[in-house]
Image (cartoon, rainbow, N blue to C red; front, top):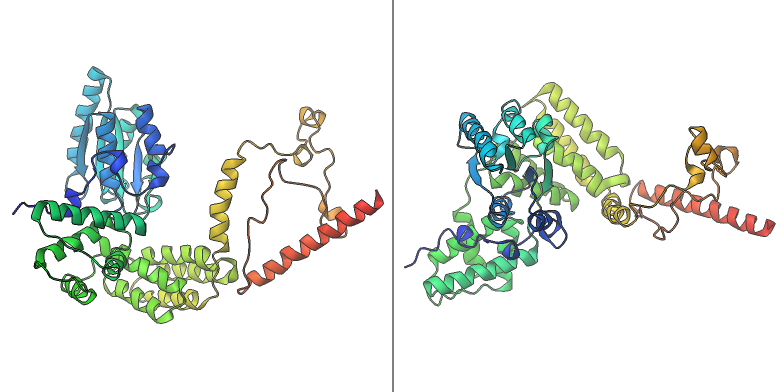
Length: 435
């Protein structure tokens, strides 16, 4: 029988058009496609969870741009090896005028001081550094080096993208082995839930199914769950497990499921996970899923982080439990998260809109002579503490960027917004009547 395994490698795309996922990076007009089309490349860090295409996209870039390149794994290689490569690259660049693309997989395995070795070669242009990491670069990357790189974030694959990969994998299995395997929608859903956006994890499971499949057999949900259970090992904080479990914890908190949140929290802590890794996610939850429905949640999590750093583990672990209970039971709102996404689009649309002259400070005589500050109304000079003066750029028609819900403190914010709207409307009517 033809060896088609591992399926993840067999399905690895060779060009940009067959790459699945990360449309915000590879879509028309997006940064990676633009790099390739313009044949110009900067040093980059690809940051995101496993199985999202970081390594694959690095190889596609190098291939399509026909650049000299070397791959290097920080997890298994020594820094001295990288230094020797970069020294040779510097010499070759003087001769060929072409920088070497040095692809460093899992660059976070080099500590921050060790990462200094890359800095002079990146600065001189001797190499173009393409690094991948599953760790937040803000915490794991040398700041001086990071300032010379552009960080591109990778996201878990979406459901439709994973389904496409399942279809492709079964087509390859049929073509190479004559095994015609079909998955029911329920079985596919189990695969998707198990993968949590990780294509490699999902394809590895498909591979396990193929290995045990008998001609004519129906792959039932029960059979698939047996296969999954038989292949689940202990918690691995350096691999895929940490991202599966932290995602499960996050979604349990979002769903206000206290028992599930505590279960996943303790699965991670008992498995030896770094408590600060968990606390960072809790802090993110406070703004993404709770927001202003309970502003106290952020304070609780920041204090838990401070207390844990003071006491350390294991004594400080209980602060994580306290924070988890608070955020799981807190009122929920994603209003800030939605406002963030909408405002990024709005600002991109109006990025050239000028600041209205009447709210520009007349900080010098030239600005004042040009009309800066003319017509400005100081809100505190009015009993209502607001005016009908426009402070938005001309031409911006969109409104209500932040829309609070009726949960917790956000209901009060909603009342405040409505109060100011009512006052401004009353002022407008008064001004209209006085004209």
